Image 1 (cartoon, helix red, strand yellow):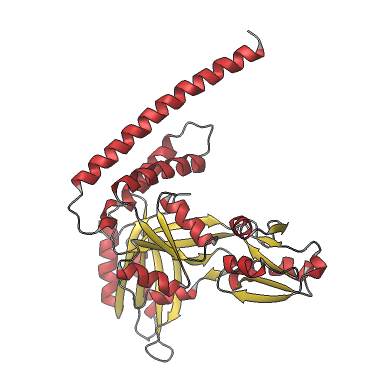
Image 2 (cartoon, one colour):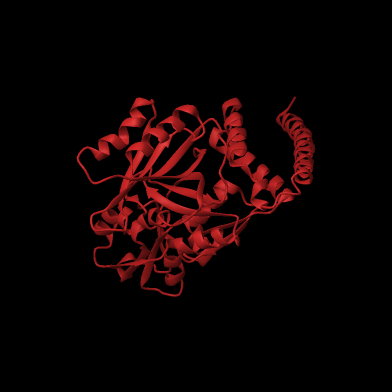
Length: 361
């Protein structure tokens, strides 16, 4: 058998497999329609989306993946299938920190797939308000970066918002210098979100020390601002360059390889346990010796791992602070439930912000 015959045989097999895939995907979509008929009476359309169920499916698929595609690639493919099937049940509207082309939009699409309606909003508090009002089913907001720490505005919103954390997304952040200049020496200003400027500080110091750094509301807004200029550049992701017609002047200029941002999915829903969950808390402690130790002790006693703790001013009194805490596990599991009960006895206030599936990479 010659090479052409071998290729023809392989392509014929691929066609057969594609036909089987099409049949199976269509069958899955019909099942989704049956689910929609059963759930038709639900008052909240967001009830069609089950974060814990999707996390279980993706976790199972990744665990059973035989290769050669990576677990991450398999998860991405199945996410899009689930997104398209969910849209047959009830199209979701997802608010996110805009404008279009931001990493937050990329995080929203990574988590929900491309079959949702996305709504870019001008500020983090607007995302919260749109979800609270019901104009958006869910929202996606940044909460922390692996090199620059927490996004304080997001944490502060939880002090007064009734919304729950329904999920999390981790996104690898690749930052590029972009613009319409043909010589870096001509750049007089560099626009970016303040965190992006901080994440590229060393690169900018070394290569553009003469350029003024201008912080704006988002990296996509930075790209929009420089689209009509020949003496400025923006720091943003590749999507923003494509969206605003900019050339990539330098790739991957972030100072730390592996730079990752974590985003939270906010909504009115309280997801059930998926088997691989986190719980986020807001805790206020009395201002007395040993208060922080007593705050942490119930977690240690019940064998619960704490993955993050941040303090923020409570805005209710001078030097009065609250703590944002992430722990492993779901609020409904016995050990977490008991730890929270013990914590309430020591803290002046405890608010569970949400129990939700861990990010699927």
